[in-house]
Image (cartoon, rainbow, N blue to C red; front, side, top):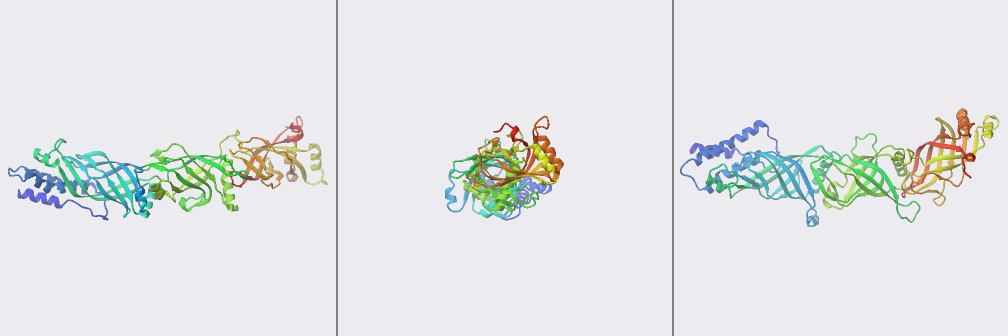
Length: 543
């Protein structure tokens, strides 16, 4: 008996404990074996003790072996977190009123424990949560079944109360941006054991005692590795503009963009509610060494997610964000906004940054405000047979023989002053006001002329309804044809001459600057109008 008692005492003294704030190191296989050995010795000693005829009362036995036995098992097992579901509680405003946040958690975990010899439950507990050594809140858990040991999957449910917002925001950034990170859990808990009808491996009278055992004061200290979202991999759909009732020409238009994200993290984010997002140009592009939050360029749109927004794991379904163009009336901001629209109109992706302004859900507002995510806005999809031009056709009022003779006459100069009518299209789904146009005319890569529409007020502007195709200007505008590249200009005049002398039509490119107003903004659209058809007005059928 003395040897068994000494063995039990040795085992009890060998049980590791962890105090709050101590580093929690993952045991190697060798060290784990050393830690398991005292527990096995304890079981042997307990078996020798129970084999003696003179047995102590069951309550004494429970006190003698219960806590160190359970403490050893709790200390040794590794806890793996598979999934964390966050959803709003029935009420959180009492916490919010005193500067704290509350949210419900349901945690799917798996673990491998030594066999208890009974069915075990981790009683309700207050677990301190720490991130990189700093405490950020408390997880108030409900009872968590641990089974009888071995490999198990179970769930831990409870409410997270955040009382250290600065640390909470640090872990929120880790959730969004990092591949993985570690959270420490610490508490002193009670373990409940039930045995009689659940496969207890001890003697019958001991199973009866264990069936009602509560083992208090057990140290629960774990480090769990969680997966981050790695920036969520935001994918955007095409930009859409839609007119809204307004008291001014081309007033605010509704901007909408479809988006979806990929969430590789451990977290399922329910009840995100409405997120407010500002969309910026990426000031560091094409070099993206700087974090997105430090690369905010010009804000050009303010949008919101739909109500009841949520994000599961993996790739989400497409969802829509809606809002308005919001561009400061400064030349630099207008130029940067025009760059976005120029990329869009020329079917090129545009690097953008979505910066979260807030959420109607206080928990997520505190976690996500200030978070910045990179994304690319794709170019305009083909809606008009591959053409996103605003200028699509030109009708020149010109006498070809007279023009050619003038160009070949060394005394008449190298410039022809003529007039043309222009057919315009609107690639947007919102009303477009054209307030001016300057364009260099290029034919076969050579400069052959210059077109200039005068600057027009909003009352004088050319108004293009949404998705208008081929609106003919009622007035003629001046065009200059330059003979600096005489062979190219003569070829252009030959091509636009009617058949059989010519082709009846030629195709030119315009390096254009279009002064526009759309959706309440006034960008200068600088992009090449490709394959603009040019023909003679008198042979076009126009009056």
